[in-house]
Image (cartoon, rainbow, N blue to C red; front, side, top):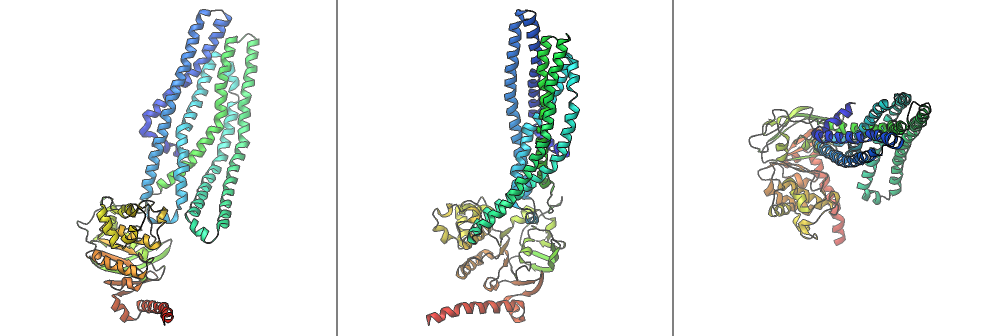
Length: 585
C-alpha cells in the first residue's frame, strides 16, 4: 500500500484529468447498468404486453446509451493515456536528475545496465498501471457493486445466489497474490542482471573479439537468459495453478445463475423480461470475478517495478550541500589538504595527507598503481567525501561550499577518457557550451589536437563513435585536454592525461600548456618523469601516504623513491634506444 500511495502522489499534479477520466468511466458503466432495464422493458412491455408505442422510445434510449458509451470511452482513453505518459515523463526526468546528483561511489557499486533496466522496463510497468491498471480495477469494482445493486432491485434471490462464490474467489486471489509477489520481484532483479550482462558485453565487444571470446560470452549470457526463463516459467506455473481455480469459480456463476433464474421463472416468481435483464447483470458480476487474477497480476508486477524505482529515488546522495553553503568571493585556486584521511570499502586509501598548493603552482603526484593518486585529486571536487581532516579551496572547507560553483572552477582530464557520441567540437565545448568556434580551435591547438582534427572528414564537425570510438587513445586524450582547457578553470587536474600520446607529442603539449598553466593551480598525475620534473612540488605517494615531497632536484638529491623512479626510467629509455643505435652502426 505504501508503494501505491507514492504512485498516487506522483499522479497528484494531474488529478483533474484523472477525476474527469473516472467520471467518464462512471458514465460508461452507468450505461451498461441501465441497458438491462431497457431490455427488460422491451420484453415485458413491447413483446409480451404489445405496447408497441414504447418501442421507438426504448430503441432510441438504447442507441443513445451506445453512442454515449462510445464517446466517453474515447475521451477517457485519451485522458488516461496522456496522464500515464506525463507521469512517466516526470518520473524519468526526476530519476535522471537524481542519478546525476549521486556521487562517484554510487556508480562504483551500481551497474549501468541495471540502472537502465529500471529506467526502461520498470518505469514502463508503472506507466501501464496508471494507464490501465487503476482504470481496470475501478471499472470492475464499480461494475460488480453496481450490478449487485441493480440486480437486487430486479431480483434479490439471484443476488444472494451469486454472492455464494465471491468469498471463495477472494480467498483464492489472496493466496495467488501472496505467492506471486516474491516471484515477480525475483524476475525484475534477474531482468536487471540480464540487461547488465548484455550491456557490458556489447560495450566491450572489441575486447571480446580481440580475444576470440564470443563463445564464452555467449555461454555467460545464456546462463543469465536461462535463469530469466526459469523465473518467468515459475511465475507462469503459479499463474496456471491459481487462474483455473478462479476461472472455474467465476465460470460456475453463469450456469448456476441461469438454473436459478429458470427455477424462479418456472415457478412464476420471475417474468421473461426480468429473466433477460438478470442475464445481462450476470456477466457484469462474473467478469470482475474472472478479471480478479489479472488485476492482481498487473498490480503486483507494477508495484514490484515501482519499488525498485523508489529504491534509487530514496537512495539519497551521501554528498550534500549544507543549508548555509557558501562560495569564495573570488576563486584563486588555493588548495589546502590538512591531515586528510579517506577510506573506501573499509580499506584506507589516503592516510594523514597534508600539503598546500598556492595559486598558480603546479603540483605533481606520483606513485605506484593503487597508491591513491587519482583519489587524491578527485577529493578536491568533492566527488568523494573524506572521513577526517579537511580540504580547503580558497580558505573555505569544500564541505561548506556550493558544489556546482566549486566544480565549475575545476578543469578535469580523467584517467579514463570519455567522449560523447557527438561532434568533436561539441565534445570540446561540453564544459563551456557558449564558446565560439575560435575558442574551440584555440583550445584544440593547445592540446595539440588541431592537426589531427583538420585531417578528419568533417574536421570539427566530425561525429565520433560511442565513447569516442573512431579516435585513437592519444587523440581522445587530446580532445579531453582541450575540453578542460576551454573552461578556463582556476584549478586544472591532469590525471595521467598524456599516457596515450608519444613523447614528442607530450613535449609539444607541455610547451603549449606552459602559457595556459600560468596563473592557475595545476595538479599533474603522471608516470613519466618528463611530465612532472618542472612542477613546483612533487608528491610521492606510497600506500596512501606522502612518502616524499619536493622539487625534482630536491628529490633527486634525497636518493629515495623518486630518484629510483628516475633511474629506472632512464635505464629503460637507454635500453630502448641502444638496439636502434646498434642497427644504425
